[in-house]
Amino acid sequence: MSAAPEHDGTAQRLAQAMRVHQSGDAAAALALYQALLAEAPDNPTLHNFLGMAQIQQQRFADGEAHVRRALELDPAYAEAWNSLGNLYRLAGRPEEALDAYQQMTRLAPAAVAGWVNLADLHRQMGHRERAQAALATAVERAEAASDAPADFRCGLLKGLAALHGAWGLWDGAARLYGLSLAIDPEDTDARLEMIKALMEARRRDDALREARAWVALAPHDEAAQTVLDSVDAARTPPRIHDGEVVELFDTVAKVFDKQLAALGYRAPALIQAVVQERLGRPPAGLVACDAGCGTGLCGPWLRPLVQALDGVDLSQGMLDLAQERGLYDRLERAEITAWLLAQPARYGLVVAADVLCYFGALEAFMQAARGAMQPGGLMAFTVEYDTDPGEAGYLLQINGRYRHAEPYVRRCLEDAGFTGIVVALADELRREGGASVQGLVVSAVVAR
Image (tube, helix red, strand yellow):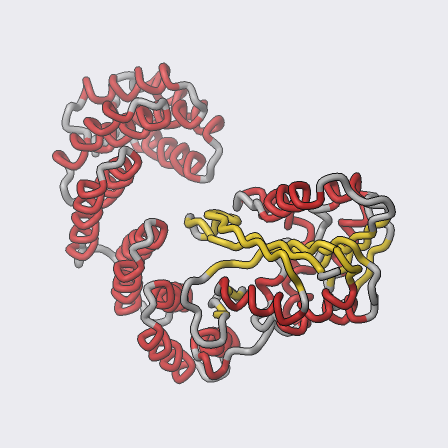
């Protein structure tokens, strides 16, 4: 990297501008860089950082001009080539981005960031083998950085592990988290992510060993105990305890909708499509239950279909927000299985969007729903999908949500008396950790 301006006062102001930039305030950083550049117009570092700030503001032409000027002043300035690659990616110019990243890795072969960017771009362009080769090089460079500070090395390894996970390379992710833990054994986040990666890699025995080791190290750590429960099939509870659900959703209620939007949450829209297709013209007097209604995200499309709409949820914080929508005739704080048991033959439509992921065993819910529904009534719901969750038919994940096998879901519906079962695979219910969460969108009818 090129040197900062030599004058101590200017160097301090540059450091301050970089801190402002790193905080996310590109506009403020831009003004600081411009003031500095007026004093040192031939400093490549200033041109590069000013260009980066302009790139972040989508001012691609201005940003390119400044980064190019940095490279005119210092053609071997590797970080400026990286900035140029980022600009071209954002501007939809992948071939030029590829050339820029390759220049960066040639000039700074030990810099992990350049190899990561090159790998990610190759993957975006469909160059699978090149992407994996570049990623492997990034890992080699990170492992070779033995002289770097421990926290820096851990950050590199965990960042690479997260990227492996986002690409579905779970064995590699687990190994990298393990390397980070070897440097910092007290990093519980890395330990948790390693166990998650082992589970995703279908290495349950290894995950179980690591979870037991964690509990042995921290016998009073509730997080460690919860992880062990999720990994050890013999300890897996049939559903999440009501108190845990209430605590979770009361805590996140005010930011819940924004969080789901950021995750690309699709469950309500997927259920809406199924219900409208199967229901056709809604029968007169239709009464519906939005089971686990949360903040009422299903309410806007349910309301025009029904004469009466009930919303049921365990979290009062979520119900308070659902109330603000003004769409529900009744909003009740209750456990949904118990609520349905107390509503014999009331509903012609029951929906449960992203709710049964907090249930492992589904038999009791299905029986309760069947009893609460009228003959010919329609039920639609989503579950997270797993092809091989074990003998039980469901698997508790470390994030506290269950995944279900399709045959198990079908069997529970059939045993409860539902017919006309339709199951569709959804490639993405939402995103988590940068990866798509697959699910099943299920609909069934109560026999007449």
